[in-house]
Length: 359
Image (cartoon, rainbow, N blue to C red; front, top):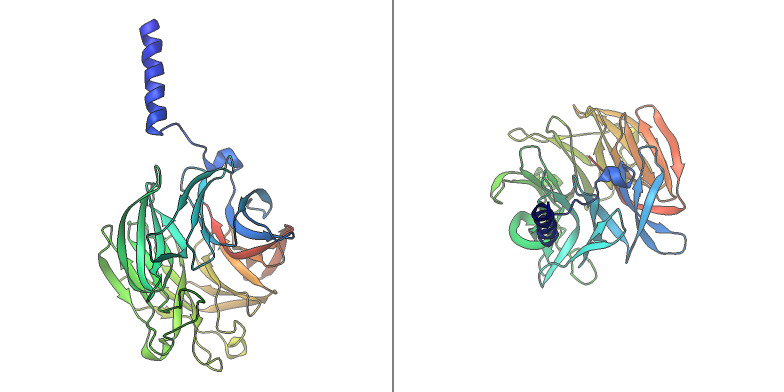
């Protein structure tokens, strides 16, 4: 029996050395449905785990204002990105609240607020810019100890959200805006050319979608994915405020993008700004929010406008089992569907722009 015990101890020591001790899963930390950054009444910042019913299950301190987070598919850990352009991203153990890793991009780079994990969680993709000129980069980090292993060109300038499709293709929203690395002044509005880029598993461009020339000031920024592979993209208009332009597009690879128009009465509701985007749980409808306009718009997957609901500073959006879950800057969480908004629960904090769904 002694040799057996010794072998087992040796095995455990080996496991510890390899960092392979089982880490907590999302179920171990209460099974949150969502993650969201928030600012507390005292001015401090935290990352919250929320239940499907909109209640805060836990919150962990952040050193500064968060933008988006991304959740590991299995382990209870999340990457919290600094408000862009940021020079830090924190990998937080959501079980202990401890810091698993602090990611710093290479010199002369800035994180751009978003990231995505590979389906098996082995790699993290981060959206980055070269500070001077805003050329887009995708950083690749292995997630055993979060070391940087590679980087790809993003296929454009100023990438924002990245989404991993079911076939392992990475979709990138290249916003097209060159910003001053110090004061974020927009430097190329007249010549900006946003695009939607699809990269294969080695960073090669498979497909790129650009908007028509008269929409070249419509910055493509945020992405949502339906179960059938339809990609939704939300835009922010940098052109003339008196022009009403579509702020939502739908795309399937190999087809032309569908831009979703709204009724004339709603043309200026969003004030040219879509802050977040989400498909509903069934994948039949897509919503975009505008904190500037204080509204959410819901569309069918065919691009038809179905509803507009108003609420001040509405921004975070994520799928719910049925319909959507939304958050606002007053700490309120909402259930939303075509019929309207229903309050779910309030947290004494101001929710930031994004609500991230787990699973």
